[in-house]
Image 1: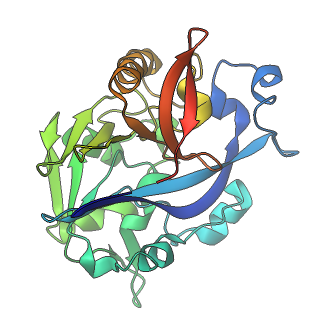
Image 2 (image 1 turned 90 degrees about the vertical axis):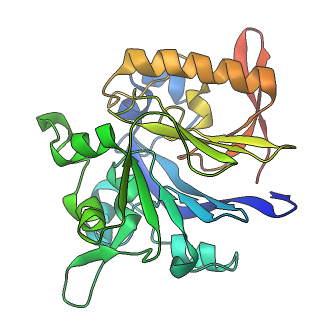
Length: 278
């Protein structure tokens, strides 16, 4: 999507598979499998999407996918087909050194794994050497001190090198990143989870992170079983959906695969996606 000096593109790091029951929470399989078919291990395939924002002020990347540090391990558990972000960014004319700001919705491995890579000595180092990495302070604290439920979700090598390199920027609550890009802390899926708003004047977009990760999660009852604060997710989903339906925002899904973005309208009392690819 191009608007004069500004542009927004959806960039994929590939796909991975997750347990369908986990993804849909309390919604029974007999209902969700009418929309997406699981494999024999009850897994569904989802995307790993990042958003690339080019403005006169900065080149901004929102989320970084899973990266390449655990490809072999994730092939077994998640049947991952990933490590595509750099190549897809290159097709848009940018490389890692061109990124000025990385905004992370949260620090789960499938959103932050691509922040770092392994050097020739085996140490994890930042992929984007010239970027500030913007993370909510609550999200950072949550990731470096996870509870027993989330030890397998966070990996220190994804984010601790950002602090060591001096590229980490912690924020508290809602913040303006540039004149056209803002973040809002929602909580819900994880402590300190944030979403990203892009206002280009003629078009307005919101990257919803794991608050509404796929088009299937537009329905209010669809909340992942791994959300830390599902009731907060529900409240924030309602608020966000009301806004995007009323004001004509485009929603971008961090885990959408076939349908990754679009407008939303109400039909028969329920939100309905009108797909629009960026």
